[in-house]
Length: 430
Image (cartoon, rainbow, N blue to C red; front, side, top):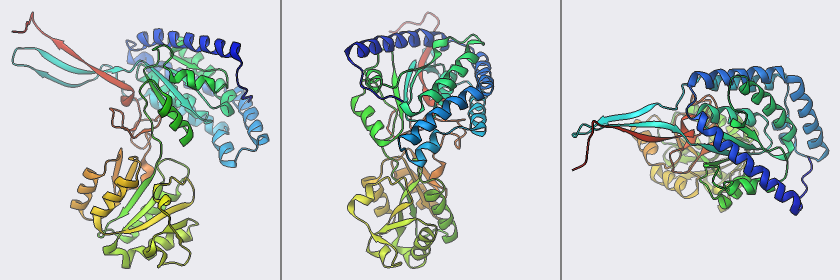
């Protein structure tokens, strides 16, 4: 897809078009916030049906995107993320239906109490308003992000990477047709229809106050740009530098199984483990087998002196390795002096994304879960469970590592805020 830089006239038109999209989204959001849950659910089922019906058109558009990606010399991994087939289109439609079936978060009372003066106070979930989602060349995100935002009563403006624009436009057209058939405004889910990167910068300004929050989903450079330039709140993570800590009371067979899954099930996802920490107290029995299992599975290991000593295939780790998100068949490994050093290492080098402890010691596990300041902390489970679907959220837009209300997988509940509803009986304050 052409990535030309717009001239002044084109830039002015793009600015005007995007601001118009913002105004339409803001108007749509007001109605969506009050729309009954049953109507939103039915509209999403209609959108899923429309996606299935548009399979041929979506595949035709995707074939053009894939052909262009190959001609440009994009990597096999890029093309695989981009490529759609009937099975993947069915998965997209099924995901929309899964989101439709989730409980409606809007209007849910999360807490209620009565004050001594008789005032009844309730904390009630409300939509965020208008969400901007900026993502790279993964066509399925068009459907996942659009459906999640709608389910939570929000309007959304989507901007995809130029490499997937034809595919995203085809999916978006099908979804909107399904939504409109059920009375949902067309502007509920909008997609920026041009590949110009200038659109990203425009969205990060907030479009004259139309956008309430930005969610980036993509690589480090995209997320870094969004976090640096955005003038509205951002739900995002920059790195998934995740750790597996094998405690002195870890079962070896369990540790090997969890570690291999955490690192190698899918190396390119943000939940993949990037560093192995092994307790010195069990290193004599556990370190060698853990390292050998990784190496034999085709994973390169970069270790400290203790790790290098157990297998000649281990390469020396540098200071940079401890903070690296490889997204590849590479892992850093280190022996630590107990749980204190493990937690300190994660605090210094981690990215507050996802970290796991393997141990049979419940007290050690409880301490790790309490003290490691990450969005997701696990005991005796793979870091690859850092996924909204695995949490029962239906799908996710991404993983948030900040400390705002949305932390961890961002699903429908995280796409809401709240307000306080207060009921009195002519009550006045003294």
